Amino acid sequence: MNLESVPNVREILLDEEIDEQEFVNIFNGIYNKDCFIYAIIPECEQELLNELSNDFIEIDKFPLPRVFPREQGYLGFIKDSQKNFIYEFYLRSTTMDYLVFSKFDVSQQLKNINKKNINIYQIFESNKIPHITIGPDGQWLNVIEY
Image: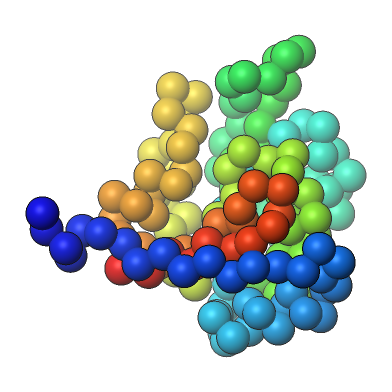
């Protein structure tokens, strides 16, 4: 087995009542500069899309699988250097199937995502790009490093 291909995954347990400042502090400890947020935002999160309108760079939109009635998902990213949006995404993480944080710009690779293969995690895993995901029900962060 090639140990170089195995990612180092660290879990950071989150308090049930974590507030924005605590959450941002955790991220500042991991990514002290830029933080990119990559997401497929479902149509039902229209309020979030409106709030992000000037910052969210939409790459594509397509029907989401496993959602009835069918709704569109908006694939895109935000460069969140000031960490103004990470907590908002955390709060809504249970309604988003695809949400990744990273200090690396993979916006060009997002163009390879399509309705047949919408798994944005594959970009990070196949290219061994360090990233963070949110565990089920927002209970922890998965910090994945290579």
